[in-house]
Length: 70
Image 1 (cartoon, rainbow, N blue to C red):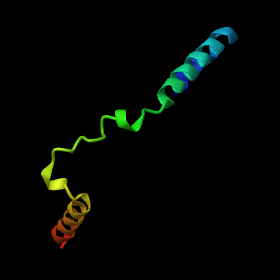
Image 2: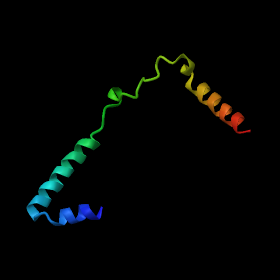
Image 3: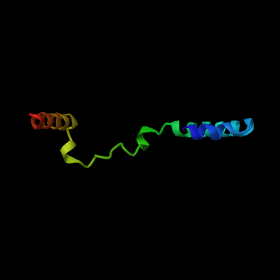
Image 4: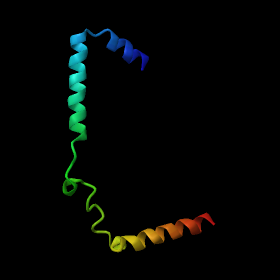
């Protein structure tokens, strides 16, 4: 981290401002929200027959975990 700070300290004000502007643009792109319907995680287990009733599946997993601890 110290090396990075030294490198930043060597930049001119204009170079530093350009770097900050670029970092801000990158961060703005990263925080754009993906519509839920387009999120790859949505529907990833839709073909899993054992998860048709997700609440029952979670109950079973929790019960199994408690049995394994005993």
